[in-house]
Image 1: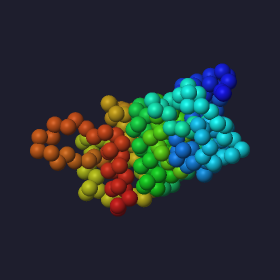
Image 2 (image 1 turned 90 degrees about the vertical axis):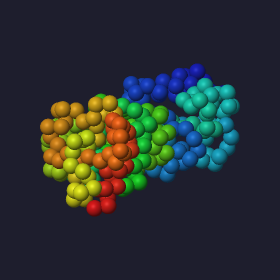
Image 3 (image 1 turned 180 degrees about the horizontal axis):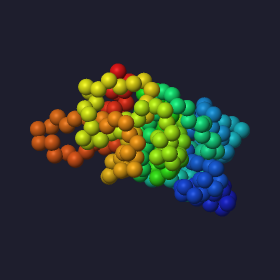
Image 4 (image 1 turned 30 degrees about the vertical axis):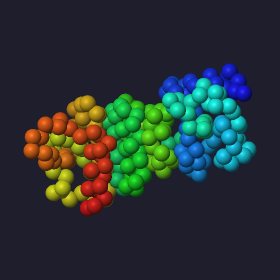
Length: 239
């Protein structure tokens, strides 16, 4: 059985302040756990309802009732692990970098991390207002990709002002991306789901790009930020 202190520690990790306080985060599901075990991230604890030979030394068998007590999922997935939050690697001013300006939705951030992994973007820079990448919903959405993308939380305005790379921003009124030559090295800024790129960040962007609408009515206000990121990353990699 799990002790009260173990249950208390694990369940408190749903909140950002406690993840930061303890330097720990939760991963659920066999596939996700295995992805992280094959990475540089250190395992702190592993709980399973049956033996999966994931990590014999760390594996603790618990009941399904106990798993429900500690799981953040509506339907627990047979295994839950607690990992240590790794220290971010310093940002390198090279390659294609994605910068996020106050992305709030965990699902969007998780999908963007997966997109970075898919398109070979090794560095993701987030404003301090962006949702925590160790939020349980973000972790679930990344499907293990979080181990292959270096994520830093920074003062985004200061970071962009100091950057030596060209800075592109996604705007409704920008130059159509399909007709624009794009570099291998640069920063692509994606804005908040409701408000887009903030006025403060807009002032430090060199070039505005957009994805055109082709529908006859053109009533759709905007694309989902993760969808827009996928389209733009495809264009950057295609050039």
